[in-house]
Image (tube, rainbow over all chains, first blue to last red; front, side):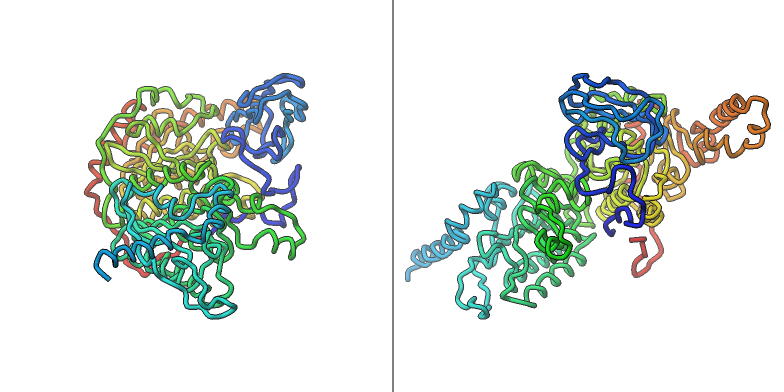
Length: 105
Length: 514
């Protein structure tokens, strides 16, 4: 089978830019982030619940956000140990793919 | 010379070649955190089972100062040996000799081993660690690559072919691994690309390191070119040994049967899947609750993780698992997961490994990028692979089975032999919300309280269709089974299907959408 074609260059770039090779799974259930501690939406969806406040200390694997996409309440986990630096979404927000949700530092 | 002296002479000649590219080159290899080619073979194979061939082969190039240049083994080691008692053919490129570069004699040694593996119907393992074509040999080197690709294709579906990337593998060299069944990579050691960072810099002016361009993580997570990722060479060899123990030697036999055992008690199949369909869970726990010793060997763990594929055993016999992963992107099918699933099904079918499908998905992923990336074409691969395969196929609907996803994931219609559903299964053309909006559009818009009416109609649709019994009443589902009985049903289905004999029309070859 051929390699799977990635997004065509003709498609308008979504909110936080291109699908560059920098995107990495930190952990399967956590999904992508560009740099350590920045958590992006992996597909369009709704912020169902926010489990942390700015300034909270979190451990790797703690639930940051419940993100509803494809009718599933996905748990967005902290990729690292640290403090919640910023929360860029509100409960109930409809957000596109690759939108910055949380920064942990 | 007396006989003893002749043997001594032989030993001395061999010792010299065992030294590879010399102490300095070996030191460099070690500094990169790599084993030498010979050490790798010894670490991978059963103790004292490696028999080397063509050790005295030399190149015959006279151009560009190559005349008389001593390249021990011409930079590649070939031979046969055993892995857990299973005979295999192996070649390993020796980076300490002329950077493992591929010349005519080097390629001929590799193709000799490939012919041997195909004729003997035993698995082939290739360890790649090479700077690329030996430029001094010109088109002879390219011819060598071509001969390798042709044999990869010839052997495809006849013997398992495994590529291990333990160093650079660039340019034309990457296509042999791409044609093989499983590619193993090791963190910080493997580098694969068609055009390297220098070319990209020159042509496009973009800066990228070799690691970011084609390192092990890139291929295991992003490109999907690699099937197994390891932190060290030792871990990688362990993975290869485990895989070899689980797959057959060729397409006319079955994988070695081992002593049967039960799944571990800690995986309680009745407690893994939440009843609320919007709560995720790890489908691998369901697999572990079904297979012997709860031992599951996942393939392509890090790529397109919304689908899970891999090997396990039931009653001592190898089975392949194809599953949706609700934990990741709700388990949707998209371009990458379709590709991953389809290729795995074809491997299992080629090598007589029964396929167990665990289904729980909301459907195909909607989106502009997916449509433009060809999700139609990629998604069709799954349909093709399931329809084409004649090996025993068992499908279990755990929860959601909607729309195209229901058809694609090993449905009765694509000739699964056994289709079971748990009572929690929801088999319908689409989710209740969407369906109610379409079917009852008029009633909802004309109602005094459209919101309430909408909820009423959603519930009505759910009550009617969000269960396995409509599909069961048509015979599309063979049995609705309690989760606790899953292993029992799987065991019997595999046993009944062990003498399965069904065919497809004869043709030169089909035209799958790749």
